[in-house]
Amino acid sequence: MSEPTDTQPVPSPASPPATPPAAEEPQAPERKSFKVAALIAVVVSLLALAGIAIVSGGDDGDSTATDPAAESKSETHEVAYSIVVDKSCADVDSGYDDISQGTEVEVVDGSETLLGIGELNYGTPAGGYGQCRYLADRFDVKKSEDGFYRVTSGNSNRGYLNYTEDDFEDGVLTVTANLG
Image (cartoon, rainbow, N blue to C red; front, side, top):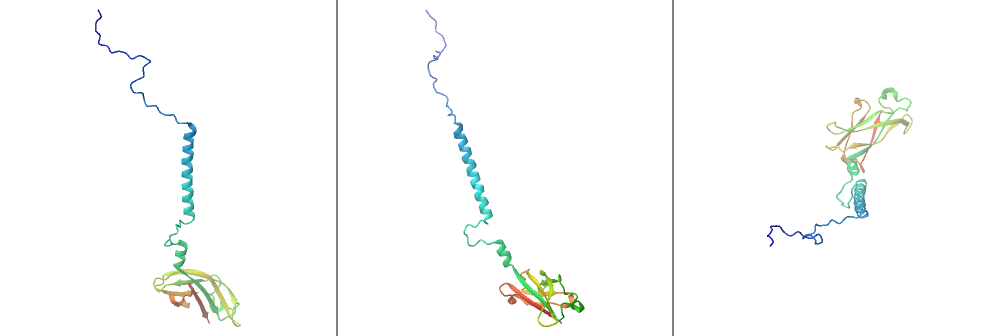
């Protein structure tokens, strides 16, 4: 007679396990490289679009967007300045030695805050006999907060010519000073 045993039956090697382990599908190398290439293409495209937006100023058609260059230009005026001396250009040094090529033209507001500086060019004969005209290339000045523009050239004894916003035409103040 055989004795009972406490052993459990051993499954045979041919029988499958009760729950098979989850098998990982191996990714084909070409599938993985395709995903990487696609990701790189998306990133490069986004960077390119961002670059175009930055270069073009990011204009999305919104009419409220302002151009900084145009905005700063609207915060300035131009001054066209000339000074006529009642002496020939050869004789200007006599009594007018502070008026010559390179002399500064200053524009200040009512409280004498500097708004801009221009510079006289060389003198040229003007008008009738014995006059010499010095022109300054047009130069930008800041808009005055108090609406006053005081213009001077030469030494401090010359004083100021006074203007207001109303004296500008199309953003340009034309000043002609006469000495003599």
